[in-house]
Length: 216
Length: 347
Image (tube, rainbow over all chains, first blue to last red; front, side):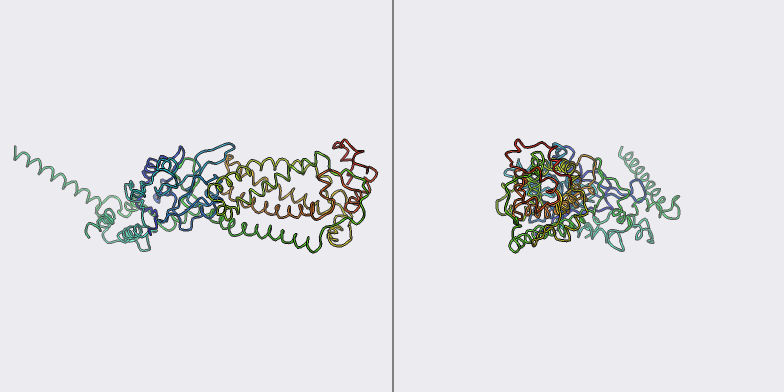
C-alpha cells in the first residue's frame, strides 16, 4: 500500500502561492477557507525561505487521537480524512494539529464553530453521491488516478505529492545533485560556494535532477 | 534576398554570442564587479539548520493566510495531546471510578448514618423555596454538564460501537450543544448560589474539631456543627475555587470570538478537564451523603424541612439557636420567605 505524503522542497519554493490557488480552485472551498498556505521565514532578508504546508496526513495523526467524535479515519493510501456528518466543530483537532490544517468555515451563534474543513489530499470524503462528496469535501482526484492539484500545478516542482518512497527518492536525487554535505535541510551555500568552479556549480543547480534523468 | 537573410542570421548569431560572452564575463570570478560568492549567496539563500531552528522559536514568519498566527510547525499541540490523552483522561477515570468504589465499599461496610433517636415529628425550616430551586437548578445543570462532558471525553470508546454512526453523530452533537449552552447558565447560577451561601460557610473554630472526629461518619460521635458542618463548608469552598476555574476555563473554550489564541484554548482545555473531573469526583461524595448515606438529609433539600432529631444530631449548634421555631410544617404554611430563613441560621 502506498503511503501518500506531501514534500515541499524549500530550495525551490518561490512563494508564488500557486498551490494555494490551485487547491482553492480544485476544491471550491468555502469563503475564508484556505486549505493550503505558504509560510515564509525571514521575509525580505537574504536568508528568506518559503515552504508550502497543508495537512501532512501524519502517520500518528494528533487530530485523530484527540477527536471526541472519532470522525477521522485513514484510507488505505495513508490519507487522513474525516466525516463531516459526525464532526461537531469542537476545535480539538485545531488545538492538536502542528500544521494549522483544520479550519472552521461557518460561524454560528456565539462564535460556535461549524464543521471542520481540511486538505483531503484531493481524495474527497465519505458521501452517498459524487455531487455530495464534492460539495462537502471537494475534489476526489485520487479516485480518478490523479495527484493533488497543488503539487501537480507547482511551477518549480517544489511541492511533491505521492507515495512517500517515490517523492523522497526524487528529493534525495536533488539533494545529491546539489552537493549537500549533510542532507537536504542545510545550506547549499556551504557546498556550492567553496567549489573550484562556481559558475559550473550554478549551472548544475539550475538543471538539478531534471538533467540527471535526461542524461540517464 | 537569400544572401541578405544569411547576413541577418549571421548578425543575430554574432549578437547572441556577444551576449553570452557578456553574461559569461559577469559570472567569471576574476573579472566580475561583484564577488561571485556574494551573488550566489543572494541567489540561493542561506538555508541552514538555524533556519529550521527558527521555526521552533516562532519568530519572524509570515503566513499566506489572512490574519494567521500559525507558524510552519506549532509543537504545543502535541504537548496538549499528551497531557489530555495520557494524563487527564485516564486520571479522570481512576478518580471517578475510585470514588464510586470507595462509596460502595463504605456503604456496604459502614452503612447508612441513621438517626440515633426517634423522630419527634417537629419540623425545622432548613432550606427556603428559593434556595431549593437554586440548588436543584444547579444540580440538574451540573449532572447534565457532567454527563455530556464525560461523553465528550470518553464517549467515543463506548457508544459509537454500540449505537452506530448515525445515533452517535446525533448523540455527540447533542452533547456539545447541551454542554455549550448549559455551561454559561450553570456558571451564573453557581456564582449566585455561592454568594447566597457565603456567610454560613465561613470557617469556625469548631470545624477543626469536626475534621478531627472524621465528621462522625463512623461510630456514634457527633462533633459540633453549625448550620453548615465542616464537610459542607469544604464542598462550598471547593466550588468557590475549583468551580470558578471550571467556569472561567469553560468561557474561554465556549466563545472563541474574543481573540483567544490556540495556546490559550489548549491551556483552558487542560484546566477545564482537571478541575471539572475533580468536581465530579467530589460531587459523587456529596450526592452519596445527601441521599443514601444519611437518614433524613434528602428530605431537607426536597421539602425544605428537617426533623428536630436530625437537626440535633447533625447540626447541634444550629439546633440550639433555632429550636424554638420548630413546629408542624402545616403550622408554618405557607412556606416562610427568605428573610425568615436567614433568621434561622445565625451561624
